Length: 186
Image 1 (tube, rainbow, N blue to C red):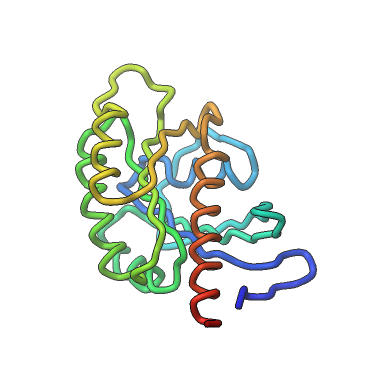
Image 2 (image 1 turned 60 degrees about the horizontal axis):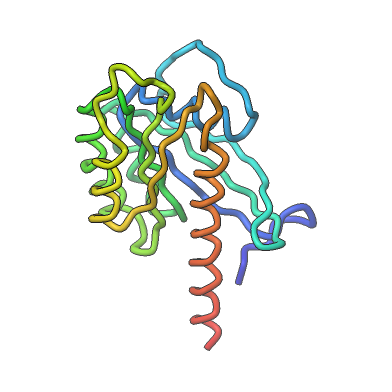
């Protein structure tokens, strides 16, 4: 059954956002939840979350988005949260090839520690940066097709595709939850 919250929301989805430090995870969350962007840049220490309620197929869905640190010393904290997430956003910086290469490690971590039905989106941030781009959209698309993940490039700074990325992820999570609940009722 869909987790009941209040009259304001029909269900809650936990989403984790992971990736290397300084790829823009917190900026993406800030853009999605508050439609704001600040140039101040501090590394997330530990774990933080923000929420936003959206409409999906006529239902009010509350998204609780967990902002994780990309620092190695906080990885154990991340693992604990993977088990209860419905979706995961793996972020890399299109201007840093190493962050894209590391997205494969983040994907492995999510798939190892999360439920088997977790919905994964790989997201290239800073798509507004034309130079020095180190990861092409085509290269990223090949990877996501290979691993069965959703894909979208975004720019938190310019507000490009951030809402659309979360809409796509949350819609997929919603449909997966509805399918799972229908199977359980049978």
